[in-house]
Image (cartoon, rainbow, N blue to C red; front, side, top):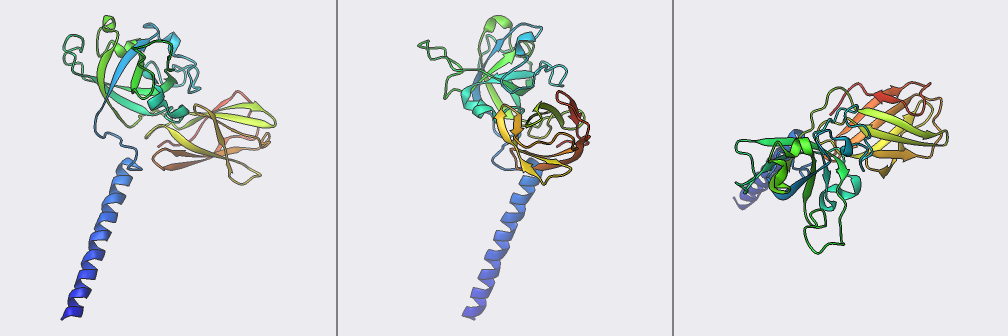
Length: 265
């Protein structure tokens, strides 16, 4: 009788472990790596704005995207403080932001905005206070068109809640190829899903898959000559999902050209 109880107890433990593994797998399938909390709990931060309503000052940011209008990001963007920027690894991530706890400035019924991280708000250690982008503060320096959706311009700075949200992009993942015959740098942009790329591998038609290194922002480089070969890419985002895009660039590709994969996250 005792051995039977032990047998049943062992099977019960196995069943509970199996159910926990299934639940975890379902969460990962739905949201990716559970460390990336897409649509998770709200966190506290503050928001300001930079530039004017044209958004011209938001172009050519620290993520390397360049012309945000042409590249599909528009003016729905923000520069992140050091605590959020993570040395550029958060570039491309999308956030939902709402104005909170400031009835004087929060526009009633404004709802939330969704932005993509495209720039860096650098710390300023020269002032004794109001250094909103200094670590460990979490701060969003929004484009002016996005800020005024939450509060009037004269508010200057507002308290906000934020959370990661899925990025919705049109078309496939895109690549801009730069460099020289001996050194290639690729900007990876228009990335859906969680948006921020954590690893890139490249393959010429005559090579195996080769890992690229993050140069800055979402620019990835490699010192292998690949001129004259068609290029394929494996792109991995911060939730661990990997997308393989074969023959993105034809063998006669040129530096400075942009190419689009056939799919997205």
